[in-house]
Image (cartoon, rainbow over all chains, first blue to last red; front, top):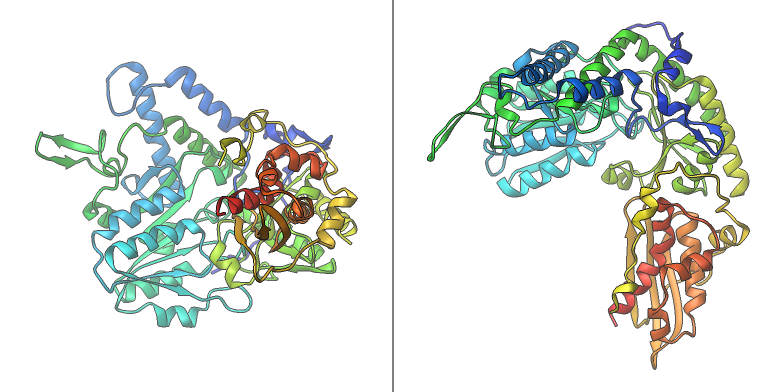
Length: 414
Length: 142
């Protein structure tokens, strides 16, 4: 359930902006207004510095060697697991580092495929990102399983009545986005987890958009697995997380095989290392793990509740201003209840790329296209949308500039 | 099919890494071709029909060519997308009408950029050159 919080912007937003060196860049002589946070977020100095420090003072391979640097690297890398675990209320063994959400979902798809049989069903939703569709399509082809999609309601939310009908005794896996990267909708994944568990299926949550913006507690959601990426939460690219309930991870087959994931190897066979290392073959992205840990500390300093309040404040203002412009259609829920700081919209007679180009003249970075959700756009009869998404360094003034720029684009394409 | 005809993006443009500066790409001729495209129709009985799609922005072009005696008698297109991609194909169909096939095969990236007359960054280059890709690949079918 949505928490009751006071809707207000972050008081120290100006200070926050100064923490991000890239926001000092000028675009066409104008201040950079970065509204493409759904795609990736910018990095504060503390994250960049932490990674530099690691390379300058602690670089070594982890879990091998006893020299000083190996100790520093291993300590930093394991500490990053601890910080992530505490952040989502998981335990250390349940946090596996991957390259990102996509790899986390692929790991699950390949590993869980071993348990699937012909005729088993996988339930997804119509608003999924390609990364939560394509791996399951491949697994379904391989194992003869069937994919079913939970449809949307007219106000761009999941049809929970239909979801209940679709999740049956045949369902083995339910995998749904916590927050849609196109619509901004926050889905009731806790309820879906309940549906899944009632029929003995596993619940996977694609939390790429939610973990950066909401207080996510895996115990509260009671999901079996949860996936997210570091770069969408002020951290570096190349690091992501797969959370899994220990009981599942213990029995699952590894995805990648090689160094560090083994316990004992003979010429004939091998046994697996303890969790979480069983799923982390090869030399991991150590500096990126250090960067992610620092990003989490930075977010926690601001406070996840305060970030949520800031998101609602900006989203509500942007929805209100966009609605005032003629020939602008918002593709997503019109209110801020169970909705994140992601707004996709279309402007009549202006292609999203042309709009994005004109916004760029004002220093504004938005995304135009299908946002890696082609099936959803096809379903909605759209070739693309323009998407503005906000984070801790965005202000009401950023939205005002965007509104002016949209009106200018309408003049050009009149 | 000659190698240099393959549409390629110049990698150096990516390496320059500059934030794209203000460029007036929405010049009047571009907007005119976008709003009032030339030859936007289907040629039912055509010699060549070829579709190109740019998944990045959803630009979609189907090019129709009518070739007779090694000459392009008629060129038309159907499709949708951004102003740059649609203006580019509209202008290109005008350009190749009446052209010898051999001459059309020799149209290169720079010819398209000259035809458009606007400065383009690496991202929009794909929109601009989708028309040429449709023509080049279409003519390969012949």
